[in-house]
Image 1 (tube, rainbow, N blue to C red):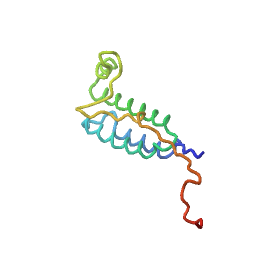
Image 2: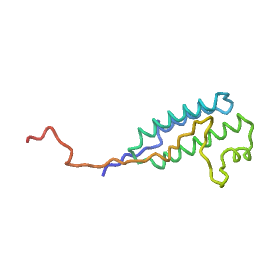
Image 3: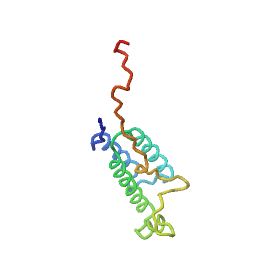
Image 4: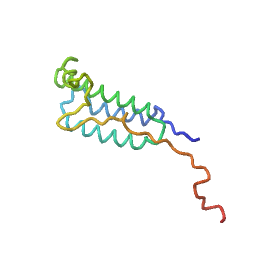
Length: 130
């Protein structure tokens, strides 16, 4: 069976660099626009790599993005951790997804990973004579 693994290489580093560039701590950008841009980047990356064995990597990246956005919002609004909890905790005690003005942060960990299926001789071969 052939398995495609996503290694922490240039693509992974490139994605984290783009996320860091968008969520600079002293950035005064509109949070709604930043979340929309982050969603576009993460959707594209997750859709490209979802056919590999990357569930762990997507989960790690989702965690990385969540913390970057939370730390950025803390700096932007001068919040303490108590304020972040008030913003992101539901009345029943569970965590809500990050959302600003109707734009919700995309959860890369929720992307269904469909692994490559080895099809062997079921693939038609045009070079074999009939």
